[in-house]
Length: 238
Image (cartoon, rainbow, N blue to C red; front, side, top):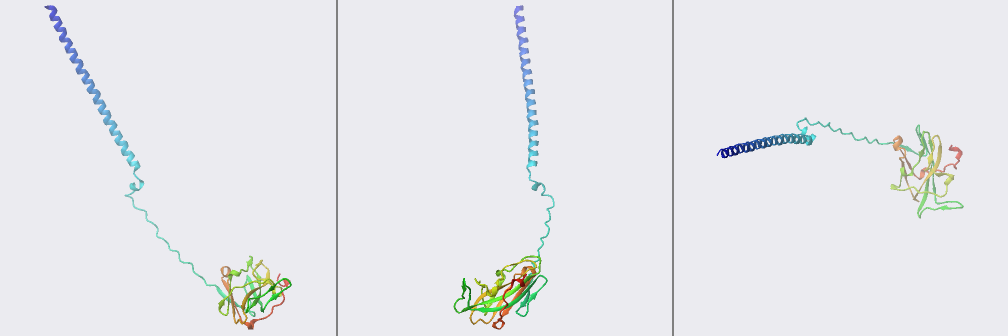
């Protein structure tokens, strides 16, 4: 009987110990879960803060400055158009040369030719026409080269535009005036046109100095102005 009582007491003690261990495990487990929940909550808050920081960094500067006063653009300035200055026109003739501090232009003669021939070649105008040759000299008193350019020359015969032509032969030993003239040098030459045999008026304009000195040279001739120049002498144009 006594042995049975001891066994019963031992069974009760074991049952109490087992229950106690179960509560301890539950408490420990509960504590562990609570700590994990706190860690999750802390990490979540940290992640939210990081996301907010990243959002702030990704906001464009333009949006950040929306509340700032916009820059005021300076008013546009309108440039006044360049003034178109008309060139000064100077008329020249056989009796009226032109000169300034940079140049001098002199008409030497005006002559008609039905043909110009030499042992090598004969220049013949078209039917019903003749050559009209203007002889002139130019002195370069500037410090730069002059190039007398045919592109700046225009002419009319009897009111109709006419282009200058060329000759193989050299009338009165003159060469074409369309050439270079060195500073301090002079040259003489000719310009030739094919004109009707009964021409009445020749008008010429040369604008080669328009962009340099703002001048334009004009001349007008009739058959009354025909005159033969002196034979060309190179020593006269050094």
